[in-house]
Amino acid sequence: MNHLRQFYKVLQILKQGPKEDVLPLKAAKHVSRKLLWVDLEMGGLDEKVQPIIEVAMIVTKGPFEMIDQFHAVIYQSPEAIDKMEAEAREMHLKNGLLERLPKGEAKDQVQQKMLRFVEPHFGKEKIILAGNSIHRDVAFLKIEMPEFAARLHHRLLDVTAWKIYFQLAYGKEIDKSSPHLAMKDVELSIQELKSYSQYLIPPV
Image (cartoon, rainbow, N blue to C red; front, side, top):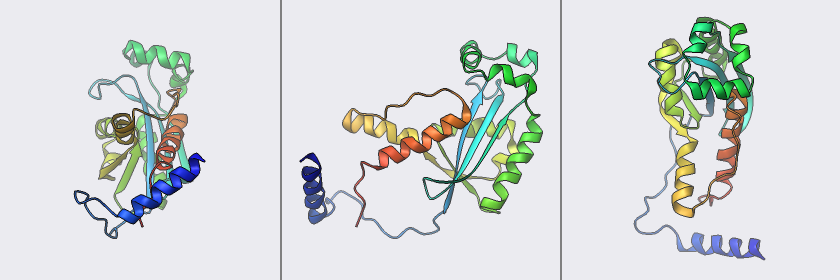
């Protein structure tokens, strides 16, 4: 019965058309066919001080169809680990990432691998990043991996914006728990946006 009520509501909205204060839709131009979903784990929140310690990337065709992925743990010296923010160090001690850092790859080597990873998917096209609070990842990339950051488009798809809208408009948000491990978190970001999209009414 609830499904029938929702279906009837959608039909009524479509019959009424957009409200007067709603901007009309038009055919999109220059649509990027792929997204690069990214999650970074860092030694803290200050990009001027703390390093990137883990990288995960997933290429999607359209918003959700996963077609390739990349993962790397970045080497950190004992001194760098000691300088990590206490909260980040404790978090990554619990999830097991901290003990993997001494065996990680050099940052410059990881950056070159990242560049080679995106090349066949995006060519010379500027890359649109997607993720949660993705501007923070970009801030770290600009300092830690400027050659990779130069490949990025100024436009971003930030899942956090959807979360804030649903909180404000409906008092709701997607129920998820983050392990603060890069690959799992980027997979959760894709799943989160896909979940929010289920509540949208497709335009006609």
